[in-house]
Image 1 (cartoon, one colour):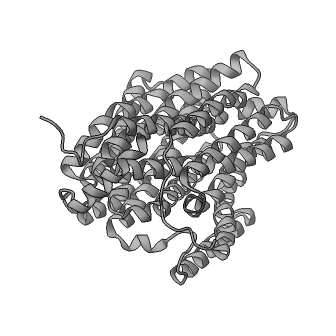
Image 2: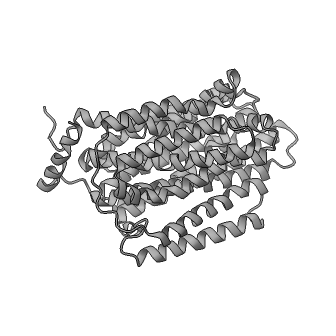
Image 3: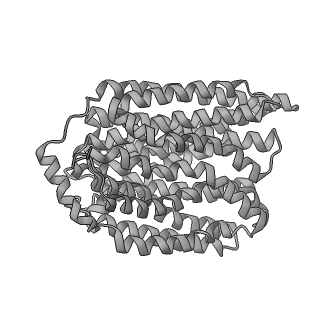
Amino acid sequence: MNQDSSTRIEPYVWKIAGVVILGMIMSILDTTIVNVALDTLAKDLHTTLSDIQWVATGYLLSLAAVIPLTGWAARKFGAKRVYISSIVLFTLGSALCGVADSSTSLIAFRVIQGIGGGMIMPIAQMIMAEVAGPQRMGRVMSVTVMPAMLAPILGPTIGGLILQNLHWSWIFFVNVPVGIVAVILAMRMLPHSKLGEAGKLDVTGLILMVLGIPSLVFGISEIGSTGSFNHPEVIWPIVAGLFLIAAFIWHAMRTERPLLDVRLYSNRIFGAASLTTFALGAALFGAMILVPLYYQQIRHESVVATGLLVGPQGLGMLFVAPFAARLTARYGGGKVATVGVSILCLASLPFVFIGPDTSIVFLSLMLLVRGVGIGLAFMPTMTVAYASLRKDQLSDATPQMNVIQRVGGAIGTAVLAVVLQQASQGATTATAAADAFGTAYLWALGIALLALIPCVVLWRAEKPAEPASEEEKIAEAELEPLGA
């Protein structure tokens, strides 16, 4: 039986997906590769680990700062042009990082890299959301989320292999040929998007967000450095960040064309999906720091072995991706996400009782199941969020979802890092050190349980999918020539 024209995915859509995935996977892998190299960088550049961690934090801050500009830039210059520019800047930043000869220059070049990398993911999602259309969003999104699923599998392993066999500069140089290919393919194959009029740049909103988000993320990152929630270096940046973000929201509600349209949250489905994404970001990325640390500090595994042992979680996400799209189309994203988070919680429970001799096979199996839960939660949530909006709202929605996910991940990471650090104090035996990880995993389980609340709200807010109207079919048909 032939598929209906409103749901059939033409070959050009998959070609465009392949092009944007190349850029996405490059930027996401870079984060996970660098994380395993911080100790090596500190030794080679003759600096402390607390200083070299700014190689990761500086990238995160620049990433968070530039994402809110994505929507306006895409409307002003076109998604294709912004995407190509982002890849070029990211590739240039990578090359500069590779030739850095001090921690200061490396951190500065990582900021340049982050400015480019920050827009790659939301712009790529924006392009795919427009090309795919609401009726085909689920199946296309199941493919475009692959970079996020592959990063936990490939990143640590690739980073470990590079560090064992090559100079650390190659963790950055490896991006250069990939970036060149990505730019050439994007110039030849990506369509020119029509996302509406850009209007005048919201300078006030830009200032508030560019200062607010990095300030908040900086304060959160300092929790891990200071080991305290009430240190002045933590409190004042977080307070300032929250105040600036609140000021932005107040400003955006009273501006005709704000930098980010916070009115989207009046859409119950998008609002619930955003809360779910925030909680999942905290649950996923926060817990991801615990697994490699456990294997390296408690089990004394090598960097490469640790990367491989982290892999089962990514494999679980990868395995369930095709099924998640079908389940979302049949039962709705809210129901599927609720089941996914429930699986995540159940698979996280055994880690609360982790010990110095816990079976690695058992832990790998639980990580695999945990990945299945994450895969069943993330993609359906994003699919439902984008499908609930009009096409002209996508340029605002995609950067907002990315900001929410990254801030959620930063909060989860900072909280679990502090919990682990505090619980590890005074641990003189392997059993006591493993118990500290159990305490941190208990907090990770609590974060995952909190993610259930917005999932249920999303379930209740979501309506059953309706057949595409004639207007929607005509609008999708107008997109077909883009791939010709």
